[in-house]
Length: 109
Image (cartoon, rainbow, N blue to C red; front, side, top):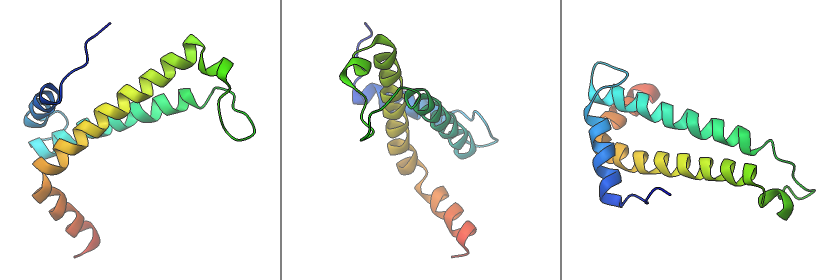
């Protein structure tokens, strides 16, 4: 079983990703592309999780929740969401000025 990464390790990995442009000409565009990838993974994991049958109140039964398939899907979405949350925490701090300028440009403020 893989060991859980510490907050410092996650921050270091995210900082490396933010420093290298993946989808654009500058680090901000690359980081936005990386964030979009993480969001797509969360969305894909959510689609899989929603395929499991739910009761009248929208709750998954204990029998379904204890199945290996459901547990794997739940672990996938938890991991993807945690990665997105950690990324967003660093992204919003690292690119606050760029995000503010982008928002201002979009809304004319």
